[in-house]
Image (cartoon, rainbow, N blue to C red; front, side, top):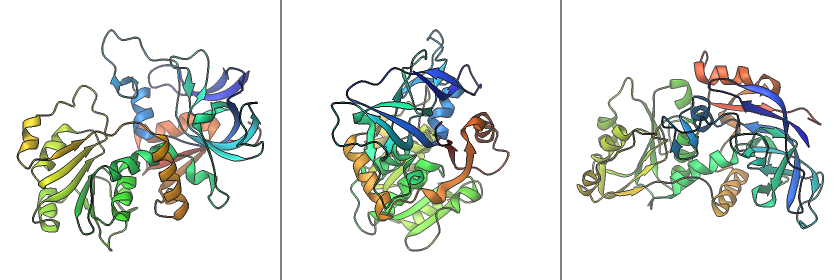
Length: 335
């Protein structure tokens, strides 16, 4: 069965090309993709050859992980439904995580249409939710996962390191739970998406002292610190700022640079969390929060590219020739 997909054929190369996908089985849903949201961090590390799967960094001697079908999240319209499925219908809008593909380093990808998805990868989109708002649902769930790992009481102070998408959704989740949140980043344009006020604070660490600001907001120490950028150095720094029995959450990809001295966690008896991937219950909960408006996705989209211009989208993400945060690929009807 023929389809179109965004493919990384080699390091730092992006192509929109025809691919082969398997014929659907009884437990598969065939979806015509309309929106697919790029995961700048994860997909970018594959494009640069830094990892060979979700949590495994590339090491010399490993098989080179190309070609690979990029991505892991999209929304679209159901074209056909397998004979064993009775809760999804043709013409329905759905979110799909990954779909099957042939001839690639990994047999699955996200930026594909038509997309052959196992039923376990499908979430129906409620009528009152804009389908584009859920086209990054897996990544939104990563932020939700980070923001729900630690216990939080109303008024606790939480620090989120990183002004990318996961950082924003972590900060939104912690704020929804009642925390006073300090979002730390290096980009004024990105930080602006987290409006100050009402228990929301932000800091550009290239100009201000993060430790001083954290101590000002939390004299007794941070209840929670979330690292979304993959910096062991940053984690060690914030451990010193946590309260007794505080919590540190690490979600960034560290590659070979993620070694951490566990002894440092004992100074304040800090609990360390290492969330990874997605689970159905977390996806369900994240979708519900987007539906209720407690998690905002649409305002974080800074760029939309027709899918045939995916290489241009990736040049922008990698070279940052202009401010960029959320990037969505749009697919034509019938693609």
